[in-house]
Length: 223
Image 1 (cartoon, rainbow, N blue to C red):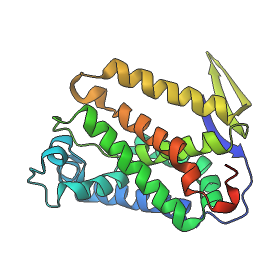
Image 2: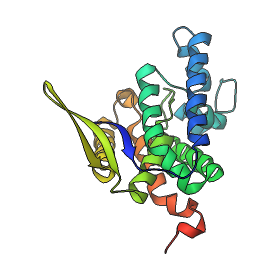
Image 3: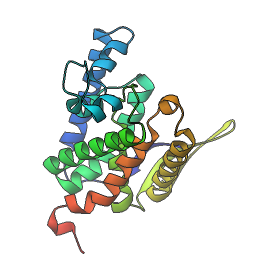
């Protein structure tokens, strides 16, 4: 399944969502210009579990700060495209519901929880983690809880046939969440977890799902 837009109008302009997308793109372009193979800058500013767990590091900034810097770095075009696409589809509605300031704080908090979730499952790893996936996963968790029946325009690939359908967010995001957990369990204990921090996705998703009601302005809470 490949979602590309939703039918869920907003009342406010998504300044923060667009700003986050722009900032991620700018940082990615700076990565490409600063480091041809990308390894040096990723090891300098990526979130390395061992360094964060022990506070022992030769990185140019304190390991805790890499929880933030890593959130805006990406490993390739497809990596940043997928994250920014999901942020664009789902982020504007969460920003509309929370307001601009609450949304940026919510986004960053989900990203931090996501990184810590990965660190808990791979505390001895020296492989840096980068990407907005954990924070975006939090947005998906929030969207699932607030707008489960919103229609998501999705491309379905059936062999040589391609079909465009509208599917409830509950199914699209629910299917995505199941994949993250299953892959995380399968890859647990393998070196680098196959190159993807699956438990970061799951941790960010749960953070968004569980805490979104706490972030909402009081007028939206009914419990």
